[in-house]
Length: 207
Image 1: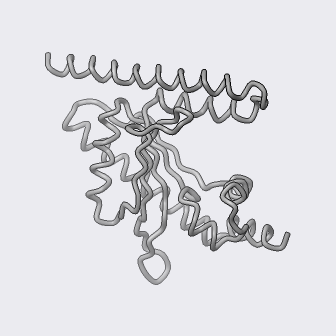
Image 2: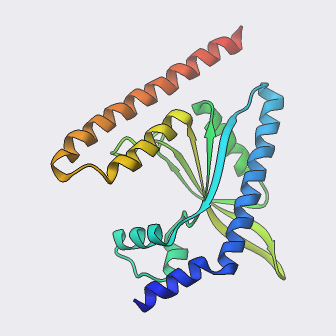
């Protein structure tokens, strides 16, 4: 109980929260700039929507328990990559990789790890490109590198992921296998749709 209380206090603490909000603000601004640069090149908006959030105490506890880890703030800080997270919804699949390429060129951002669930979807059917980053922020008396996860996906991928998240907590053990199978089929349909829309756009680009 003491560890849980300390974890909750640290997650809700002003320093972590302030740093987190600073990094989220920085990343959202960078995404705006990247979208503007690509708009000048492609004459269309590449990023359709973006959001940022700090992971809730309840979600952190569930993730630590699922991984069999100690419920402490230092462990959470080291082992959980998405304590601070930003998500950007892109128009097309190739836009995702263009945005990721431009993120890689940022001098105040380091890419720690890439998880490409688009080219290699999860068993559930989940698709998204996850970039585990460290972003530099000027805080108090110096520069600090703060870990943040950036998720890049299309609107179709986001639609599937949100519904899967909702349904995951409602499906019972008996129905789980058949429903999981149906969700995987839906993920395949969505992936096919994204590819078809990309092909149509490329045809239009050539006109």
